Amino acid sequence: MTTKASAIVPGDVRTRAEIRQAFGGSGQGGICPSVEKQSVNLYSDPAVGEVNGYYDGWLVEEDELGPTFEYTGAGKSGNQTFAGIAGSGNRAILRHAEQNRTLRVFTQVGLVPNSGTKTHQYLGEFTLDTLEPYVWRRVHGEDGKERNVIVFCLRPDGDFQRSSKNLIPAATDTTWELVPFEIVTAATLHRDPATTGEMLTSKQRKKKASPPRKAAENSATSGTFVVSEAFNKKMSLRSSAAAHIAVRREAELTRTYMAYLKSVGHKTGAFQIKVKGLTSTLKTDLYDATEHVLYEAKGSSAREEVRMALGQILDYSRYVRTKDHPEPPKRVILLPAAPDLDMFDLCKSHGVEIVYRTENGSFIGESLPAD
Image 1 (tube, rainbow, N blue to C red):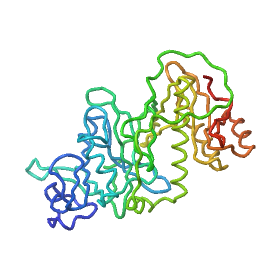
Image 2: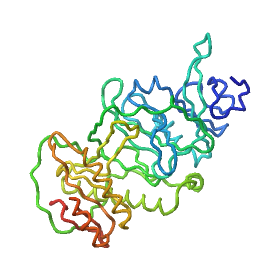
Image 3: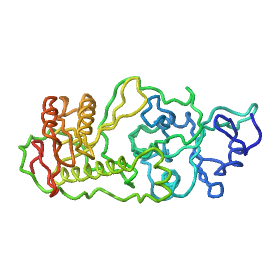
Image 4: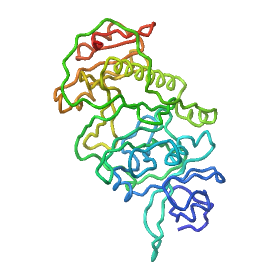
């Protein structure tokens, strides 16, 4: 083990005292900001996380942007938050770039010989994922009660250490569950989950479709994440402006349609899906629990976006079931404008419908619920 604290590089193993000398932060806790060292140090201890119903670590699956490290926020009991003292550590992660601080991740690997002092391996510097900085996830706490936790999606920013010891274990079975509806992007910040009511406990009578109507304003949005110049500079390393615009439009469209469903008395949610053999957790867009309808939203009506949505909804719908609805759901793609005419035929041939928004803000589609 190297003893010069200032020379910590990815892969090095150090005690917390040595890490504090180099990067500051508290002597205890998982999220340790340091104003002096301009750092936010994240400590992951698998033994602690597993007891509290979650895993920190690398996803085995990579996307076009490379590897992802999932880190669960602070709060061992009850729903996690960004608000107040309890949410101060989570806010420090979310705002690290605009506060000009560097995210550094350490994972507990052992003990100093003949001592109870823990040692931690330095994994490297990270930044939040550009388009999805965090997700809300439903887990079972050590007391057996369900709670909402914040799972930050971290991307390596430079050299990093990755080993099989830091991988999130693959799911042993395919499972799915209905969870509260939330949207998280780099453009929005919800201080609390944007739920729209209790899930249904009994079957509801089907209703006939109604004529197009004005989209209801979204009343569930609780705040706006104002992206600072520093944040944009940091986050733009891996994403184009066009991608940000599409994600913002998708979030706005989904929230607006969710509010419309709520205005006609429907209950909404989303599905959290774990697939056997995979480490990542899938999350659907919007689910109408009253009518058993699964929606996949896109921020653009371009042909490639419709084709992507079609593939996603065919994939997700295999797992969308509830006690009251053991049958496959109705599948609908939600778009900000009408797509090319042949896209309607393509989707219909796969048993998927399209609902889109008109220029005056109303929605058109056979699947519109009745008042």
